[in-house]
Length: 518
Image (tube, rainbow, N blue to C red; front, top):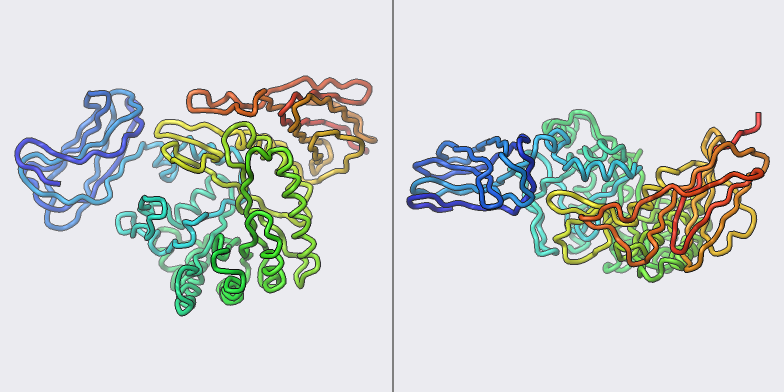
């Protein structure tokens, strides 16, 4: 950044401001600036806040600053400039509201959106990001971190979210972390030993005592107590390697990782889509070494009706391979799933697939959707559960349905008898036996009345919450974030039975309070 007379500077991407709220930031600088530095917030053609900073010197130094904007602004800009003549080098310019700083640096509305789903497990790093990720680049002071080493998305990640931040996120929303290790799948075989060592060091950083080599590093970074990360996955989407090469890697990584911490649970990459052959090879060669077979599937949104049933059949075929293997306790982990859309089709698909998960609960233990969060500036992969810009966010239909299903979770699945017609239904019961949840999806174009009776358990109350936007093309947006949302519907009890109405293309949860036997 150069200046000669007057003032010149650097502007950042627009962001959202609230009048009177405290914003704290800092920048790292070195160089010469006879008049010092100035940082300023502008928006809507006016100046919203300004602070002068002292002149930098020859060595890198941090310059903190604090703002309280004079007005709201949805597209503000942070300007960094120098007054007078000089040349200044900048590094890591950051700014966030105090409310985000109090939440560990996470945006409160996005953090709440995650927490409201009550996710039991969150996986990271995911997707192609995991294939090249080097975890040591993302720990320690933020200004010392190395950039993510690949521009696969024509962008560079500054590694501001690393291991410590990810685990902090999980703890804040009540989830267990699941970490995916990089096995060097894009490197020569001679490099594998180094990647095995790196994976084991990552386990020690997370789970080792504070007097171990990498536990000391974690403690020095402000986290003396071990994190106790239980779940680990051996890379992501390794199909390009070929199954034999990947099997060889699992056979080398799994024993070493278990030696680093015998208490961990390991997942190996299973199939994409309906590739039963890949699953068979992994299960036959690696079942005694692992705890989960991690599979992926992204559905055409037009298959919202038949897609869940087709994938459930695939789950059962894979479960049969597991039952016949050397480790029949191996479980299925659907680590990436979704329908490729953010209209109501993906909500119907979500409901059907979540029902399939519950029906397969004896052998399918974990399911994790993708994409989870997506900035609206992205130009591809419009399927995220949470969608946001610099100011606000909205839930896609898959989020709406998953949240409704999660709020009506019960641990014990109960049998259904009778003809459900075109409906996809599961029924579960609370641990104390006093509450029943019937989750139903009508993916057809005709309405259906569902009549429910409960054998030997008198009904006390009934509540039916339904999502029925009326059109497959309906969607939520930033301007209409609740266009698709659950609504209460009639659930009358008559002669020991309750009848509810599901219009075309609808998903809903019927909650029954019952009187259990003495």
